[in-house]
Every structure is written in structure tokens, then in C-alpha cells.
Amino acid sequence: MDQGTGAGVARHYEPQLRRSFGAVGNAILTLSAMSPATTVFVYVSVLFFLVGTWSFPATVIAAFIAAGMSLVYAELGTAYPIAGGEYAIIGRVLGRGTGFIVFVVLLLFYTLLIASFALGAGLQLQTIWATVDPRLAGLVLLVLAAGLTILRVRTSWIVTTVMLAVELVSIGIVSFLGFAHAQDPIGRLIVPKAFIPSGGAAPITWSILLLGLTLAFFNMTGFNVSVLFSEETEKARKRVGRAVMLAVAVFVFVVIVPTAAALMGAPSLRGLSTSPSAMVYVTKALGGERLGTFITLAIVVAIFNALVANIMGFGRVLWSGARDQVLPQPVNGWLEAVHRRFRTPWVACLVMAAAGGASLFSAAITGLVTLMGVITLVFMGLMCVSAIRIRLMRDAPRRYLMPLWPFVPVAVLASFVLMATGQTAHDLVIVLLTAAGAGVYYLAYLRPRSATKWVMLGAVEEPEEWSGTAAPGEALKVMRPGAAPEPLPSATTLEPAQSGAALDALPEAAEG
Image 1 (cartoon, rainbow, N blue to C red):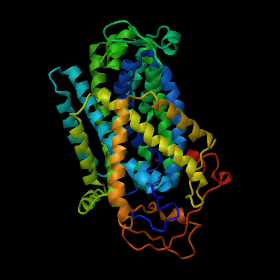
Image 2 (cartoon, one colour; image 1 turned 180 degrees about the horizontal axis):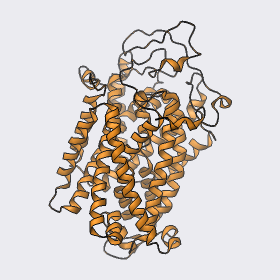
Image 3 (cartoon, rainbow, N blue to C red; image 1 turned 30 degrees about the vertical axis):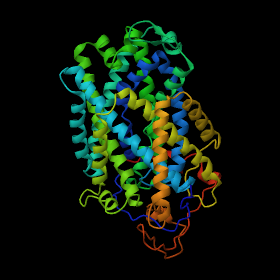
Image 4 (cartoon, helix red, strand yellow; image 1 turned 180 degrees about the vertical axis):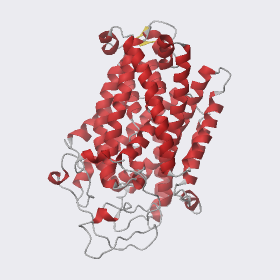
């Protein structure tokens, strides 16, 4: 694949989105997208079902991998604070062709994730009202969430913050119940046991260990959404990295604690592992039917919250691709539309919601989760490769420099390769076919039109971010795809000694 436009490109995107929040605001929106309650009550239940008590050790290991990956995102996200996220970063570091393949694979991932959230909400409602069709219920919630994504980012942020508080309260209740009824913590947390619905224990094989680790890491992901809101974050070159690390730190805590509590307090490990909703099983067994119903409703609120935040983020990726002229006209123009009043990419958000709604009727939630786990390994593995490659680029942008480079990206990448060996052939084939189709489109349509298609410009810069780099009196210029380039001062690369331990004193993350 040909090399991307590179960090030294002399054209920048025109500011179109409104910068509305700082590091903490970005982190809260990211946590809403990661959805702690959805992870704990839906995805961890899948993990219990598939790998039993191996869930806790796998989650702890996955937490270390996620911490390393947050450093990768902090460095790359501050280098290229662009709404396109991973494809925008990988395309500029590893080449435009590779970036386009990632763009297409990510759209598949986002579609499946939206569908899995909506289906998960429907399944939770079915546990209260048995006559509810989970897919139709999920579709109704998806439509409502899509409507909220059109509103001003600040308004959506307030709504998601309130719902995030409800999520954390529900997680706290389950954790308290589990620890209050704890039994045999060593045996339940350390000794791996898997169970089958018909009764008896299942053998713990190497493939089960790798599957559990992959799904546990997938449960920890979602922090990439911080980068997707780069163009709406003030002083993004500093604060995006802080937001990523803050979101991961909080999320790791609120996932590990209830996972341990459920394992320690469950009346029956077999009941926990074979229940369609493990956490609700624990809540009802230890706290009663009414509390279980409350937790179930809290889960629905959490999933709705995640739908709002994720459609917002994923819509920005599609919008960014249209801005880079990935499709023929007039489709790019439609998808690139920004709401005049709310300054949100409303058409792209609605298209992503529609794609998720269509996928809602295509598969069971377990199948969606395992496929998304494979896709996660692919695009995050390429992010690790980009984190290694960017240090070798002469014209790399100024950015946060992670500590322990290159150990962190190499170690995380090695763990991904190991996890990939335990995935099903079915999921691997789907990802490979998707990548192959994207490669054909790129070579046949985009590459021959590289002057006007898949045009990747420089990040939207805030004027103060150029202080000290522009010549006296030189104004910051921004360009749109297809316009003639104008010279801009090249960004400087921070040396390790200049970067400090974190983004110019990490404690500034207390800003809202």
C-alpha cells in the first residue's frame, strides 16, 4: 500500500465541529461509550458463560494490556487528534491503503457493536417482561438514542453523565452484595473452572484460556472513543491523552471489582456460569426479586447511554471518512453534512444507527461479541505497530511520548498475536474477507484518484497550539479537500526529555 500523506502535510481541515469540553468531559463521554454497566452485566455474563471462573484472572491480565494500550492511544491520539480515530492515525503512519482497510473493518465493528448493545438491552427487558421481543425492543431504544445524537454535544454529554451515575450505582450495589456474601475467595478467583449448561465441569483447554483473555480485553476496550471526540475537545493535543488514561483507570476499577464480587458471592458457580444474565442472577439470589428488577432496569439505562455515546463517536468516524472523500459524490456531501444549529454530524450518526439496526436481526449476541473481539485485535494491533513506527518518522508531529517505549507497544502486540491464535476460523475469515474487499476498492477506485479521493489533511489546529512555531504575523490557514495547499509551519517533535512523565503535568485533567 502506498504511504500516507504523512505528518508534514501542509494542509489542515477546516474547523466544523464545536469544541465543547476538556479532558474530564471527554473522559466522561468515553466512559459512557465504554458503558461500565453494560460490560459488567452483559459482556461479563458472556465471559462467565464461556470460561467460568477463568473470567477473573483473564480480566486482571486484560487490565494490564488495556493500561499499555492506553499509553499507545495517548501518544498517537495527541499526534493526530482527528475525529477519524484509528483509521486517521494508521493511514498517516502506515499508509493510506492500510488506513482505508482499517476504516472499513472499523465500520463493520461499529455496526456490530451498536447491534450488540441494542440486542443486550432487549434481552434485559425480556427478563422482566417475558413477552417482549428483544430485537424489536432494542430497535426502539436504538431509534431514541439516534435522535439524541443529533443534539448539541454538550446537551448529549449532560444526559450521558446522569445515566453514567445510574450505572455506577448499580455496579456498586452488586459489588456490595457479592462481597457481603463472599466465600472461598482463593478457590473462586484463582482456580479456573468452566461449566456446561447440562451440568458438570468443562475441561479448561488452551483455546478456552485464549478465548477468555480475548473477550476480557474486549470488555476493557472503548477508550478509543476519546480520540473520536478530538475535534470537539479543547487543547486536544494535551487533553485527549489525559482523557484516554483517565477513562481506562476508572473503567478497569469498575469492571474488576464487580467481577470478583460476583464470583465470590454467587450461591452457585454453576448457576453463575450457566445463567443467561449472570449478574442479575447474583443480585436476585442475594438481594431479592425487586432489587434484581431494579438492576435490570439500570442495565437498560446503561445500554441506552452506551448507544447514545457510541453512535455519536462512530458517526464522527463515518463523517471523517466522507470528509476525506472516500465515496463518490454526492454521497460524500450527504455524509459530511453538519447540523447548522447543533454543529453535529447528524447524517453520519443516523446512518451508523441504521446500519446497527439492520445488523440487530442478524446474529446472537455471543456471536457478535466473539467477532468483535477478533476485529479489536486487528485494529489495536495496527495501532501498536503505528506506535513503534511513529518514533522512526522524521516529520512526526509534536505529541505526548509514552514511557517504556518500545517495550509497551511490543508487549501489547505480542499479547494480541497470542490471543489471535485462539480465535475461531469463522470470525477470522469474516475479517479477512472484509479486509480483502476494502483492499480491492482502494486499489480500483481510491488509489487511481489519489489527488481528489481519500485525501488526508492535517488535524484541525487550535491557534494557541501553534504558538512558538509560526513565523511572526503568520496566520493559521485551514483547507478543505481538493483545495490548493498552502504552506504551514511544520509541527515539531518533542524529544523524550521535553515530553516529561506525562502530557505537560497530567494533573491538569481536573479541568472539565
